[in-house]
Image (cartoon, rainbow, N blue to C red):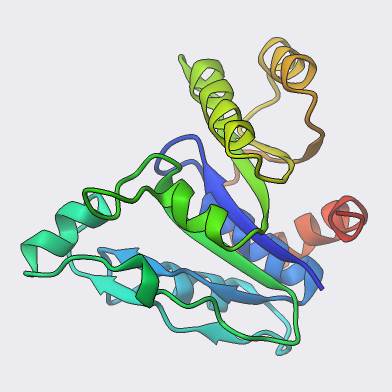
Length: 207
């Protein structure tokens, strides 16, 4: 059984699609503890639509917030304060994929960051890195933050066209394995998710 948390170096780097591939490859359950925005079509809904098998349980979010903002801000607009102690990891006999909200240093309230919540669950971290100017800095800062908290990093998944210079320096300086690559796709559907799951499966099952 695996408990894997998917986090990213920034927002909109492909965490939800990567999560769907992991759920497909591992026949795992899925949980996004905090959803901010798009309540009519949540990330949980997206993953559920992209996974082709019926072995997974899609656990309900602990917080469902209307505005696509940082969790602390989205909660404040609804007169709430996120309480990490009330976010209980689902109990399951299956592997579990947890999708974080935003990046690691996103605040949940004025005391707790997303990384603190993930650290409390002692899960393996998969970091999604997307190529853009500044992504090396963001990736290395994310890795440094995880290592400083002595968190278990399973590896990196890159999103975008291959960039050997960027990927090699991150790989060599961090010492982390590259688990896969999500290339630019015009359509993401169940068939495409199955293709990725098949190609990534060996690396993922050996975590």
